[in-house]
Length: 135
Length: 296
Image (cartoon, rainbow over all chains, first blue to last red; front, top):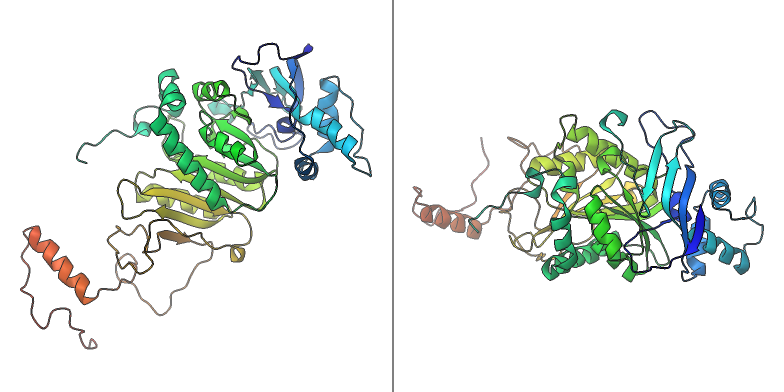
């Protein structure tokens, strides 16, 4: 498990940010409880600087499931406050920005805690395809 | 044109049709890029999004052409597609949005209320065909719209540019969307032009009273043309509502045909068209198109 700055920025790989992870759930057949958040099993993680947009961060803060941010950050060896602080000042939002926008999970897997279904992440793209039996 | 090309959905399932060769067309063909970009811009316009930074979903994001338009307009987006090759092409373009490999007919794997809107360019018609023996298109369409309704924030819209094959598909899609709680309908830009005609499914997830369909392009408000094969009124819309309208005072004969305005010019034009087709048509006289008295 390693976090690096992308040495080959021209290589075609996509990216799964923790922002996206925060939205994803398992929709395997019959899996409708405890199907979120998906557990991240990272293999390769990269760090890419992205432009900070305070208005966007405030907008997303209203949508984020904070406990999932905490557990996802832990999986990537990052620390965030266990709870959203009472005052969401710019330093806090900048840290949040680093965590949800600048960390790319390039390979690994997302695992459902309920049904144990694994969704592989390859070249930054989570494969959420279900088999015909799982629909 | 008299040459009928086979529809892509009739050739292969999308994950096979959009192979490496087909996907590379989307990356390099300037005509395709222009068309997809224009349709994306129109779809975003139809979303009538509020000001500010928003989180959008691109359904059937393919090679990322529509995603690039979203990024250009300042939106953050997550894309979804069934074709690995198309997603690779999008990765090559280094699009900003994260992307997920997923079959939309299996439902959207996103938790409730997270998206401020959704667009989809040239994808929905794929959902209307059965690509596997286990597929039941109607079930898949319902599952899709149900999950879309869930993951959209309340009051958010979804706009789909698509290529309906026939009225049955239009009905399948619109009725399923309505069943899942959406209001809205089919908007047809340039309804009178075979070449320019474009279909957009415009859906709204809020309360029906808070929504009016946007105006279609290429439609003259004063036009009386109702030779549209029943697809839309002269406004370019086929409006659907989850409310049942009880039309107590107009008893439609036959299959509930839309009441049309058949004035004298229309009748004369129709008669001339029939003559050109070689049909037997009564000669025009002073009685032609005269308003008849009440029926007994």
